Image (tube, rainbow, N blue to C red; front, side, top):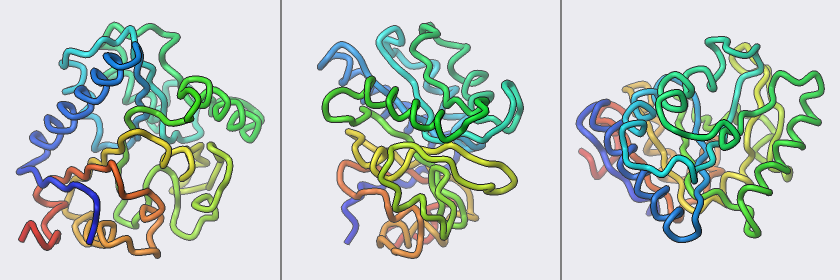
Length: 235
C-alpha cells in the first residue's frame, strides 16, 4: 500500500488552488521555524496556474529562495525555458529579491561544470542536512518526473544535479533522486487524462517508471479528476 497521501480535486482550477495553499503553508512554516525557506519547482504547462495562485498567497517572499527542479537548455527568455513561465506567472508578481531566485545555469558553455556549481549552490542554501523545504514535482504520461527520461541512468546518479538528454528535443539540467529525496516535503501536482494510467503505477511503486525513484514518506500527491480517474480509492 502506498504511503503517499493522495487527494483528487475536481478540476484544474481546484488543483492549482490546493497546491498553492499547501505550498504556501509549507513555506510559512519553514520561515517561522528558521527564518527562511527553500522551494524548488518543476516546469511544464501544469504548474503555471499553481504559480499564479501562489503569487496571491500571503508568503514572506523576502525570506524565500526559489530553485528549479529542472530546466531545458535554451537561450534566456525562450518559451521552452521553464524559467520563462515561472517568471511570468510568479516571480515577476511577488516581492522576491532577485538574489533569492536561483535559476539553473543552462546558458553556460560547460554544462557539466554548471551542474556542479548548481549542486554547490543547492547545498549552501539547504543547510547542513542538504534538504530543500518544499519540492514540487510533475508527472509525464511516460512516467518521467523532473527530467528523468525512461531508461536514462540519471535515476542512479550520485551527484545532486545532472545534465541529460536530448529529451523531447532539448538537453536538460535536472535535480537527481538524491537531491529530490532529501527535501523536507514533496508535492506532486498532476493534471490531465493522459496521466491517469500512470498515477496508479506511481502509487504502487512500479520500478519500471522513473518517477518511482522518488521516496514515499512526507509526500502528497494532488491530481485533478481526469488524472486521478484510475486511482482505486477514487473510483
